[in-house]
Amino acid sequence: MDIFPNIENLGVVEFGRVIVSPSLRGKLTMACLARFASKLICINELGDLLFAQCRPGLVPHYNKLGLRLYQAPLNRLSEGIAVPLVAIVSDYKYHKKVKSIASDIVTKYYGPNKRKPLDISLYNHLFLDKIQKVKFNEENIISTVGNEIFNSDRDFKIFNNISEKELKIILQKSILVDISKETEVVVQGRKESEVYIVIEGLFNVIVNGNIVSTLKKYDIFGEMAFFLDSSNRTATIKSKTEGKILMLDRKCFNRIKEKNYEIAMKLLFNLGKILSHKLDTLSQKI
Image 1 (tube, rainbow, N blue to C red):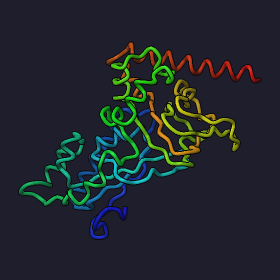
Image 2: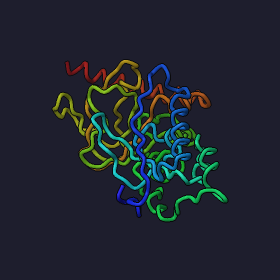
Image 3: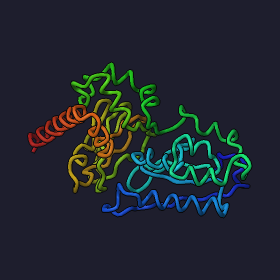
Image 4: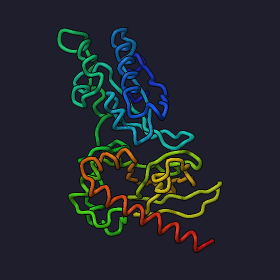
């Protein structure tokens, strides 16, 4: 927080961790809570900066709450990595830009002939795309790793028989994460459904505290949990070096399937082949 100029003279609010019941996920529960919190903060002038953190796959959803990435390292939680986020409560222009669900509330209290918003120019250097650890839109992902993936699609087995045009559609719904050395990306025993593709770096596979293998560029992990609703992570994946990973989750896959069914089926088929090959290799070792 101390990287924010003059923060000692600002009001700071932390958006605590919210766990929504599985039966209520995908509905308006989180949105309603966020709008109510935004209204309280704006009406009562409770804070200038709102801090939060979330798992990488939730960054696009938190962005719709007006929260954004800033220049900060990823946090390490017991279940893996978390992404730090911040909202400048009075930044009505940004809320409009991202179509935040609190945009109408913020513009009601801040702007011309209303309360004066914070001077955003003081913080712009913290929000530059090139310094962020997480990228979640097509332009940023393609500019970072797009050419490498397009030119090496045969090596990325998950993208077999998928055209460059189709790859761009997949990348639109993906999330790219820069990983520091010695970071636990996923933790054994946790229930999650993301699948990860190694773009750069080395990652150790750890089972019951023992390193059993090392993943490298083009490798995939997390596909078992991706397919099974009740599956817990069977291993901890910890970075051996700095690296980059591309993340796909079920929501991402479902969004692709809604408008591009054929692409989704190709992706699903490739994932199935990769998982089958791993299971066959494992059975031969037993």
